[in-house]
Length: 177
Image 1 (cartoon, rainbow, N blue to C red):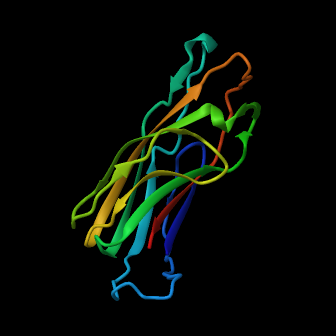
Image 2: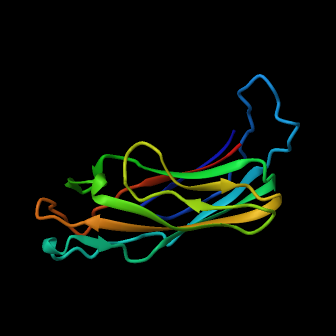
């Protein structure tokens, strides 16, 4: 399984390049399919902020949607891909009263540029320290770009005491066998 991991700070940020290895756990090799390689991954914007000012409001949307993009080189529509996210800690750094589960993740769209590739969003879920799938689908044949947009909302509550420098680091993983 090819695995690409990108660690991002303050809800989204950073870029990464890595060569990943292929491995197959099983007794039979599937039809000698060529396995693609995950290329560079980027996330934008570098920071998503929440302007939480009225705990009676319920939920506050992030300042902008996030966008994750990457390439798969020599992919095959017979192979699947997934994108997962997990938080680096159970609460925000600088704001320990705000649990990461107060942040809801929602996939806005998942696209593959061609080659019979497909993308589909998973359901909405609260952030966790365990990996959760945001989107997935079939790889495209050949070299294609992949884009997933995400939206974040923060459940605002009187119980959450915040300051202006609450941060959380997220790790995104692109998996393509």
